[in-house]
Image (cartoon, rainbow, N blue to C red; front, side, top):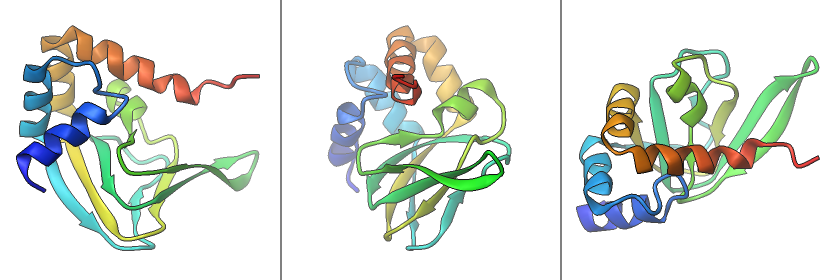
Length: 138
C-alpha cells in the first residue's frame, strides 16, 4: 500500500481519527505491513501482547473462552483496529483473532505506540474513545 493510502486508512480509523497530521504520519512511519491467509490465526488469547493492528483489507473473527466455551465475540472489518487493550496494558491478549478471508493488516509495535501516545496526547484520547465499543450497553 502506498503512503498516501496508508495515511488515509489511519485517519479514517476510529482509534486515530481527529489526530493531528504529524501524529498520523508518525503512526504510518512505525507501521509494518503484513499479509495473511484465510484461516490464519493472527492473535491467540492469553499470549503476550506486543502490537496493535489496523486491518487494511479482509475479514476477521474474534473468539474467546467464556464460561468454559469458545464463543464468537465479534468480527473485524477493514479500517478497524484490534489489540489496543493488551498493547496499552502490556498484558496478555484477551481474545483470539482468526482470518475468515485473506487480507492485509498493519502492525504498530507496542513500544512505538506507547511513545506516540506520550508525544501526542490527543492520540491517546482517540484510542481510549475507540475502546467504547467493548463496553456492555446493558
